[in-house]
Length: 184
Image (cartoon, rainbow, N blue to C red; front, side, top):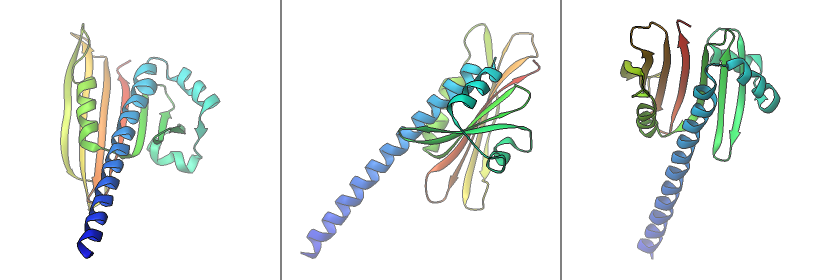
């Protein structure tokens, strides 16, 4: 009897773990999609994106937005999807857009990000700017950063793409993906 109960508990734990992994993968995919649809798609007209978000998204209070804006003036909103909530921050100045998520599959997200921006469409050239890791935001997390730029040969103006992922010792990762314009 005891072994039957142990087997049932193990099976329920396995099913729950698989469901949680599927949810995490769905949130990771949704986060990537939000980054592309919001930041990458609108990088040349962030004021239009700001206007769209002011009409359709839930604004964060100044206190909630402050850490997402890193001391800059700007706006931030909460974006809800069927699989999770994200935040988007647009500092004033029109050259930077960031999307934040609390629960993602960090390694899957890094692979998706590299596949997305690791090579540029012609005639642009992709260059890896940074790939690093180490101690995270807290003592009990692992932190990874990736950044790439796209530029035309001979030009100093660049599109900038960055991903920062922190994975606590227990639980899913949290991430921020940023797109910016350098030298524009």
